[in-house]
Length: 171
Image (cartoon, rainbow, N blue to C red; front, side, top):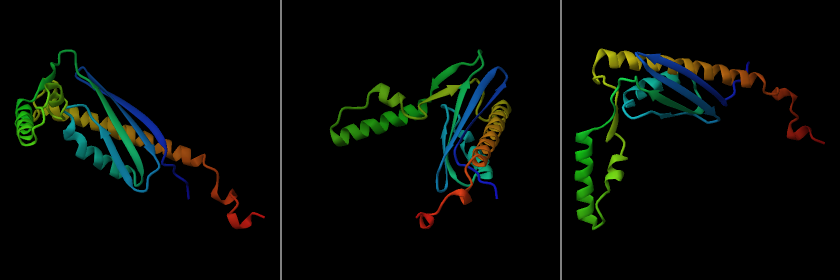
């Protein structure tokens, strides 16, 4: 039976319509499978599919996968989600009134996840958006496959357990 390590590193890159991205996947020892994703704003929709990809390839390990994304040069950049900001302001005012604390600052409100989103010029429900996300997930699958190979390669280099002396055999 081959030993498979839980330690490894891999990366994969992709591009589509002028946009470029890069995945980094790292793995360390863990009892179960714990996947931590670091995604840029606006990419939360791929999280569930990324978890399915990880679960299909790994049974154990603490895995961290990070996506860096560079939009096409014609993309619009960042924008404020007005509904998310309005909700955050309302909650901040309610908390300030109830507690007597100072109201939240604008930099604190803008730092909340989902208030500032990446506007890549694609409508969230458009075919182009779905195609881009599928290409990003395809490159994540490649990164996970490379990580699995790295873990197997490291495990193959691990000293054989039978060569170790047990505590009872020490004299």
